[in-house]
Image (cartoon, rainbow, N blue to C red; front, top):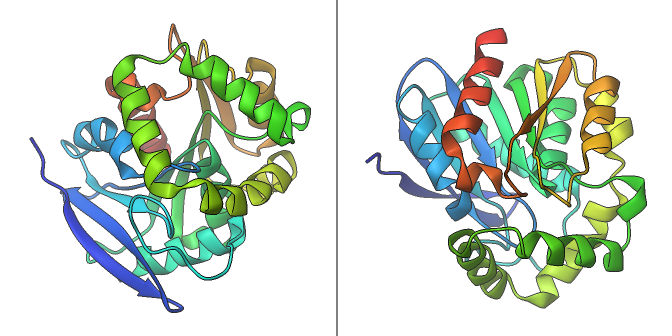
Length: 248
């Protein structure tokens, strides 16, 4: 089993973590969603590490990293993550794989520094216009919890506890207010928008809308899976990631 070495980076006075493993000419960066950490990406990271260099980020304030004194927006997370990517020993552009709020960060990274992002994989992207408010997101999250296996719920909710409600509440407006459908129009790199078939957070129509709005994208659905699809079915998601890398 591939080991992922932890490295703490500091950018603009903000400290957060990268974990890296694997080897090869391909390079992937995995970006988690709100409240969680690198942990739910580890099954996918281990799959990809058989073929490529893989880094998994713990964004500032998440996964036990220090919480900045001020809240951060999606553009801030993207800028900080890009800077950390540049510090990585592997160098070169990466295929950025984002999940949930991490999809917004992946899009923003590709907007800010196109040369650093070879391709983009969006898993369960947030947030469509019908759910840009806290009650709607809470209801969708509850429905997803009932569809997830016990193992993924344990990982997600223990990470929520580490994050805490105060930091979660500070970041939530940034996720809700980010207009994914407008930003994705600017992405020119190869792009896949994917969802689990039973994902209530990223409805089917929304995923197809995003793929249609992107310049070089397509929509994929993974049968029978809920929102945290890369934890439950890492083999299928790894294949998607490798296909995007092959198009780069």
